[in-house]
Length: 490
Image (cartoon, rainbow, N blue to C red; front, side, top):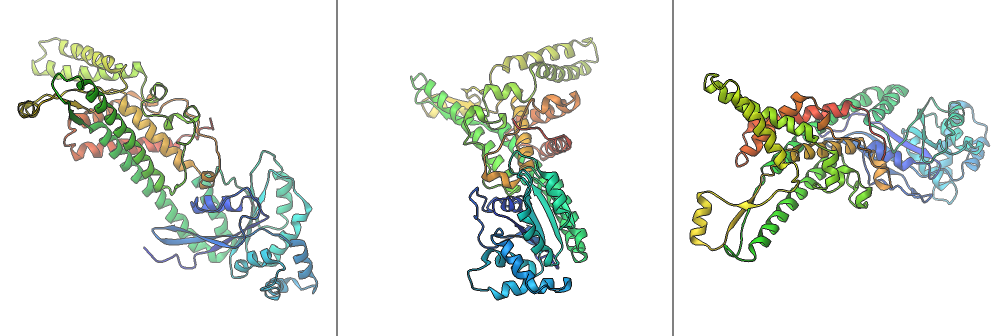
């Protein structure tokens, strides 16, 4: 679909300077390019921000200048004492009478789209005290006769919302609390639903818009599940090989270290690439925690191989040992079945011990180690070239895929919850008290472990069925996380 929704509504976001109008537009339009500044008067002319899905305009938000001479403008309007039905025309007369002049510049600019048919979204800061001098601008907006809704935004720490609500309800059909820095998808939809009921002509187009945004959220989550699946596949199947300058050369150890460093740097880079994919899906172009000091970052943004990251995310040592013991017991059980049970379960018991032992062996090593490359290919290389061949990967630490999955899911959760108005300001970071994988039941952990094992086993050519199964498991974990309550700031 490329055509705009027929009769796509327009909404003028109006209010005094520096009360959060641009922040609200940034969040509602999912556009962090909207100019947001603590300097009063940043917005001097109207800016249009269409909200689109698949290049189809659903509705348009208009960023307007703040009122500057509302009291004088209202006095001009009241001079002729117009009847109620004449007031919209009187407002239009103010705009026309002062066109091109130096009076009521901001008022004329903000009233023009309203007179052309835009609905009104009036914004105040509920953390600042109510003042009677706001009544002039609210009265002017009432004179336009356009459908209007008031939003009590929150910029600071104070709370004067109750006073604002009593005053606003005298001028506006609906009054809503709306924090542009924390508004969720559901809150944005509720706001559109409210607007839909204010004007009969908006019912159909805003109904279509709400449905389109719902489909867009579903599509995004499916693409995120696919992106995380590809990330896990790439990270768990990556291998690297290099050759030292000589079989016994002093540089052999250094070559191995360089190989290990290159291997882990690739894994880090691939994770960052995956994160950018997710951020772009949600139209976050400026969000970044990477500039924060290391200790100030959340665990999801610290180094992939940081000790603190692995202590918090993924599975605990006991869970890992139990998981590998079960895996080994299953393998041993196959042996028992093959010999007709004459081993009296010894295969399963030995397999459990072997599996737990393998996990214990790797628990201390967050970093993968390079080893001498074996096999026929390496033997042929030694025949025709000097130097030892080294190989590293896939990363075999039992917790690595669970840590990686937790980081990917928590990053996605932070991105989807993050309002676009926050991207231009310093904000709190999400609190992470424990990993996600550790909260799974045994069956869920076992299913993930089995897929991770298959990825490593078939690293040269991963079967499509394995990738599909992993994507299904990732999507299920995303669903669990979406239904969970949001975490507070750190």
